[in-house]
Image (spheres, rainbow, N blue to C red):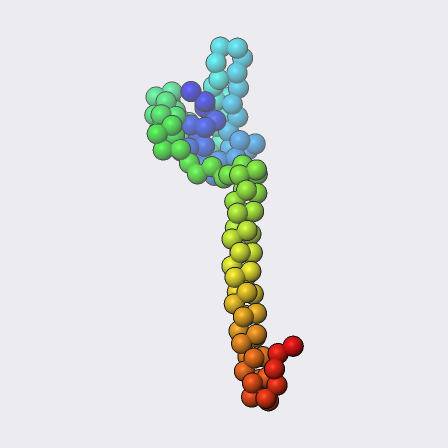
Length: 109
């Protein structure tokens, strides 16, 4: 069991710098200081929270590499859409040019 993860599961806004302090003197980790406005959790509560955190993990933001891969994929999709729009507009402009030249009685060069 990882005490830090158990506590953060139950109290996600708890700050380990000011709200609690964990310690390990070689015989396992324990809560050395507890400054939250709730009673210090028992070993049983910590175990329950730890087990719950393993079943229902909190959202983990993607790793930077995964995030960048997602952003690159989005950019590629947007670029493909813009290329498609550009091709469509180019074809529309060519059709308008032909109509104007036809109206003027001129041919395309």
